[in-house]
Length: 371
Image (cartoon, rainbow, N blue to C red; front, side, top):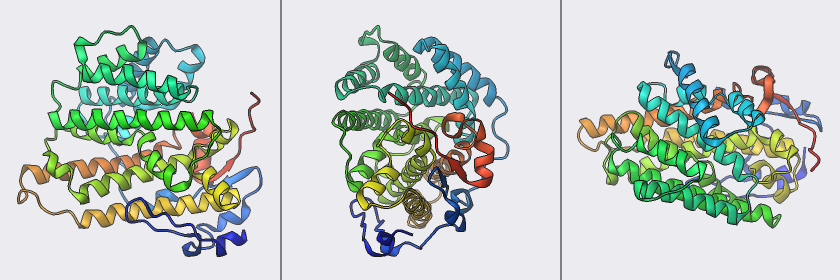
């Protein structure tokens, strides 16, 4: 075990109520940790820590919606055969059914299109410098803000307009504004990430946490909870500190657990925009120590979520606003538990071995790619 685990203090001061240090950490989050080898890692057991139920009766038309959404992306994005195959392995329809399990068919399809499109943006942004990221952001955001008055021949612009024209007829103005402003922040953060990649720079942990809350893409997905279920939550209610803390805790869980699940793939590409990498480099600890540390942060984010729920007041004495808020919070819970289970169903992180990895929690690291 690394000495730094016992002696060094890593305090995370600038995000929410969490202050954690290596000194506060248990020696290990799992007895399996002792089995970790140089070419493998042991995942933390986040699913057991998450007590939210996985929907047992997910929408029966999810597979059809996923297939239709896949065709929409392949056609609109002009994907190569290789990229189209990878998108099938993503299983975006399954993810959508897990995180928006009670959405009507039209809303489910729109949400599925967005998630599929968001992963596509994530893939293409990995190859961009900050100038390319900013150009893509301009096209997408102009397509959202200016609508029919903005003309573009860009594939991503046309897909954005097609997606958005199906949202606006039923979405509230508050939801639309939240979606657009949060998507704008996503692109700003992606541009910073691209600039760091270009300069071969690694942010410190606190800066990374702030940035990751936007590069995760979760905030626009939270707005889609309102769209998916026809919610009408006033702006001042959405700005309540407890509701903001709930969204932030859910975002942290999804983003940080993704950093753990995607580590093998990302290290093979030498991608350093990952909390595990940053903890290893900043603290000089082993891979497994960093995995355990980030895993404990993930568990703490679930605990923060549950604590924030207890602080939520009634906004209208149990009437429509309170019912909509309760449905929104259930949507965040669905995202937490659904994303954890989906991470072992998709081929994006563990290839064809997801079910085995879920059972054993052992991940064999992929070899480094030669550029």
